[in-house]
Length: 311
Image (cartoon, rainbow, N blue to C red; front, side, top):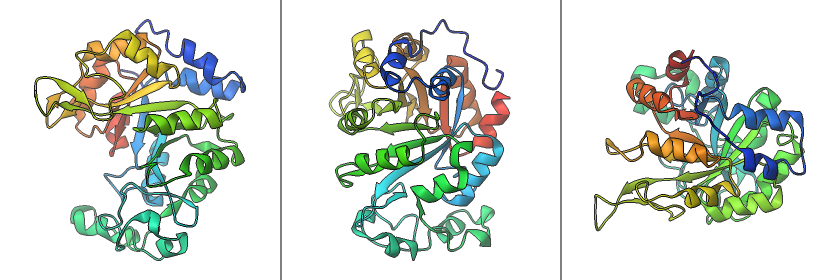
C-alpha cells in the first residue's frame, strides 16, 4: 500500500461532518486536513514512545523527523491552570514524582525527572540524554513544532481536569491551530467532546471507544463508556450519532489478543462518514492486517515501523 494513497473504498467520508465542522471556517487548510483524513494517517502515540520516554521532546522529535502525520499527546491541567502533556493521572510510573498530576503546580512538575524511568524500563534503549527530561507544556510543544506538525490531542480525565476544554480551545485559537488544519481532539468522554464542539465547532473531533468482552457474557462485547453498543450490535444509526459531532472513531481492534472489530465494522463506520483510527498497534503483522482492512490510520509507539510498511 502506498503511503498516503487515498483508500479505494467508495467513501463519502466526512460529507456531512465536513459541512458541520467547517460552517464557520471554510478555509482551504482546514478542508485539506479533513480531506487528508480519507488517506492513511500515521499517528505517533505519545511521540515515538517505543524509542524514547513517552510525551518527551525526544520522542516527539523522532516522530516528527520520521514523518509521522500526527503527534499524539494526552493533555492534563496543573493546579495552577497550565496544560501539560502527560498520560497517567498519577506521576509515579513515568517520573520521580508522587500523587495526582493535577494536584501540582507547573513549577513543581518542572522539577521532576520524567526521563530516567525509561532507561530503567528499557536498558537496551537507555540514553543518558533522557535523564532529567521535563514534563512538557502544550505551549512548549507548539513553540517547537508550530504549524510544521499536526497534533492529535486528548482531553484526558476531564473529571479530574475541570476546565481543560476551555483552556485547550483558548490555546489552539491563540496558536492558530484550527483554521490552519493542525489539530484533532480526541476523548473517551463524549461530554468533553461536545463541550469542545460548543466552544469551537470547527475543531475536528475523534470519539474514542474501547471494546471488550462483557462481564456477564464474554461472547457479548461491550463498549466501556456506553457511547456505542458492542461491535456485533452496532447500527448505522449508532455510527451516525457519533458522526453528528465527530469526524472519526478511535478504537481498539484487539482485547488480550482477541479481535474486537473486523473489516465489516471498518467499512460500516466509513460509510457513515467516520474515519477509523485504531490504537495502539506495534506489531507489523497486526499493522498490515488493519491496513488491509482499510483503516484510515493507526496509533503506534513505533512510527518508523508503520511508515516502512506504508511507503
